[in-house]
Length: 234
Length: 234
DNA sequence: AATCTATTGTTTCACTTTGAGACAATAATA
DNA sequence: TATTATTGTCTCAAAGTGAAACAATAGATT
View: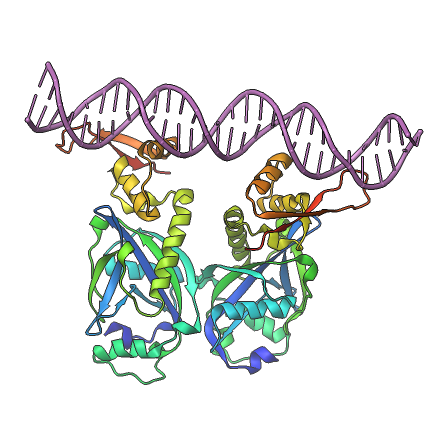
């Protein structure tokens, strides 16, 4: 068991990732389900002693999704005492057959440096970690209860995403390289949780001068075919 | 020496605060100067083992400025390996007559959870810590070189402040309870680093419906007296 | 008391952006 | 050829913004 064998991690410091994906018109995030307990949690991990904090988060993302070169943004560090519940980690570990000293570093207090990632849903190859039965997508608008303060972490991630979406124009990271205007609009609608006006959205997006127009997409449907767009490379 | 006597801190975790004040038309921050070395750094500290992360930052702020109930916002956590330079802390400590084991927790790697604060310049009572000669105001537009990555921390703080200023309407925290429209405009100009149009600024601010108008301020100058305003309490 | 100066609060007007809808284009079907 | 569903563009009114003009006024000057 890698996590328990290795002593090369910084104590007290963890990271958690809110990994957003978009599929079938819905915004979703990845959650891990731990063995037996049925508990759900954000994917996360620890920081190696000689590793940049950001590198640790990238490594964790790579391990769970197989993806490199992802849009990843650190948004908050959670450090309340209320999140210190050693019995939670202890239960998770015991369900996997690990019985630790009460003063083992993994049972001590942690602060969580939290990141959110925006990924292309289709490109992910999901891989659970050693303590989990599964890793799977959950709709953001219908999330189950998560361990510790992970629900609060998701809320803050979504809030930050909403605040940054139009300023940083990062919505395209949830779509494939090429997409229709309607798909892009659906991403925005899923993130903001409300319908947007089609013509206004199109005018605004085209006016930003960040999209490149490509060939039309013929889907076989009996109506005008939409153009495909991509975000202009800087 | 409190810091060295106490073992009750979390290792590897520090906080740093970019404390903004406004005076004579300039945006300023507080910097500590360490004994002998002449090195300058952001005020900061460590987190007690049974203390909320945010509480630690508030405590640090209180210790240096005497102020409670301050606008304080966590904006980023710095955790690169590049910021791990034990010889810096060692030099600072030795200049104060402390000679530590190389494996002392204060000489180990730290990540810095960083906050910025907005305070009323006039209300501050400055108090250096045990390792510092002085704590003093420095103009943001003419900052000296700071230790480690503290210049980068200030940059990110200022960037976050600029991004949040109009959305969160927090500029008033840099002024006394009551202020003139011109003073508020000067705060905005200092933060954005550019002149704003007087009439547009006034119209926008009044249109936001967040200001309460009070009596006029007669300064003795020979021109129309401006109204005093305060931010409407929620 | 009348005039002057500096600054403030408000209004005006052109210009731009936005909300809401109309209209024209078109890919496949009937 | 007409129909349907959807897309891309245009129109027009409403709202917001930049730039400047105008009016008010506290104290100084005459």
